[in-house]
Length: 210
Ligand code: DC
Image (cartoon, rainbow, N blue to C red; front, side, top):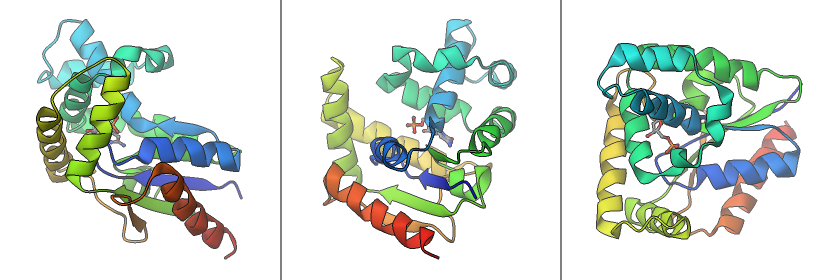
């Protein structure tokens, strides 16, 4: 049976880096589902609509073009917040759900990372990981990542963003951010990327033996 690995967690928890590495290690296709929400937000903004326009957001989600996922603007700080806002719209989530499930349902298996992969998108995934870390540590990592891309925002502003985004993502009524009951929670506050990878690999290899 093809292996599906579901990775969820709050903003800047390191789940994206981890998911990419796990996908390479196990030879699985990888989908960063946050990019889908970011691409919908960018489409709405580029078309001149307000982010509170739920109909425009739902239309953008239904017509999402995969080419958009390569746009470097998707990684900008403002786009994380914009994505979080439109991701609370149920019609946006519904439009993206089948897309994600098709990706996960391929013959090769898959690694998907996001907020609701283990709970909603792939409730039958063989392995579910919930990656978390203290907000201050996540802000420090995101600050470094943005600086590497030439976007220099104050650390305090990034921490505020992260706390606000977590609250919005966890409190929305449709598919909120939360660990699935059968997810293994991995707190990476004191782990570097290699240690987080090894810890995740141990969980996955353990699950595959059963
Ligand atoms: O993982 P990210 O920072 O790129 O995600 C951006 C926003 O998209 C996040 O704050 C909430 C939303 N999102 C979601 O609601 N469900 C997902 N599976 C992935 C992202």
